[in-house]
Image (cartoon, rainbow, N blue to C red; front, side):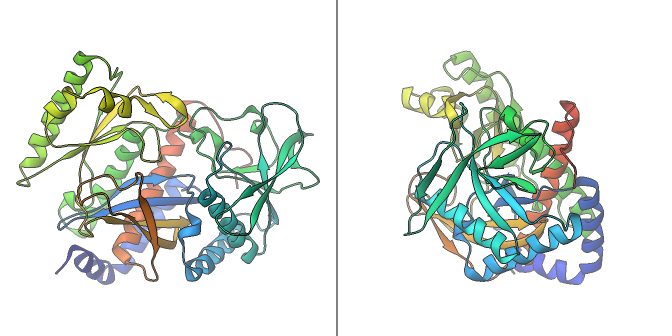
Length: 397
């Protein structure tokens, strides 16, 4: 029996137990409005390898899942704040990628189907006011209007939103114009990649899946992802690379106790878009990185210099060169698709040049459960960030 069928059967036989556990953890965590989770499935493991708080791939969902997502949006606002009728979407600021704008169009379609009017608002450095159309991959353009603040409210032209929805991971900063406003903002702008740390996320994730494994009486390694932090790394320093190499050796030794062949991923502790990620099978390969390798690991999205690294176990995908990505709204599974990369194998990072996406029409309960745990972990991560930095939610729903 495959691991997916095995866990699906376990879920079917423990529906009430799992449902009650999810309910309590969701109440404790308060997951963000939406998330997406990259999932790896090997012969013995199902695990979340990344959970995004600002997902940007709604265009890869099938029409069936667009409808499901709209129902989950409707449920979210019916239960949280039924007065929300207008939403302003804050997108990525400096991208001409047509597929990203396909994502925005799909997000607007989801909101429209749930009975919500939406506009796209741009943040600019000066006080200029203008409209601009961004090209999608199809004939439809995305119209965006610059935003301004009036009487502690954000407006875009004559559009006054009830809620502001962030679809920008703010790798460098969060914009001051969005501070101290009366409208609700989801997710909180303080938790972009300028603040998030992957080791913190996986601390909460592994703690949750350890609890879930005990609840289901299965091996704790079934859902976990070994993750270790190495701080203050200068990738150009041979001493620092040797320090990272020591941690790689420790991780490989630990993992090799349970498998004949293991690899690890070395990742930037803050960042997205698959940048600053390297697959390593021996510590010497990282210690002896050539100029191109050092350059690859030096800079993350937005030109930010790498500071901290995580060493994370590599989970080979049973799908050879693809991995499922699950999208959640209101911590409910709202759709999924495969990320595929014909230039990579089962051990490598698929979120690189050459990847494409294949819509799915069905969902696996086991993968949906792990995606929900990933979302719950982000909720705990958000609380940790806000408490640590003495921030509070704006107009909490």
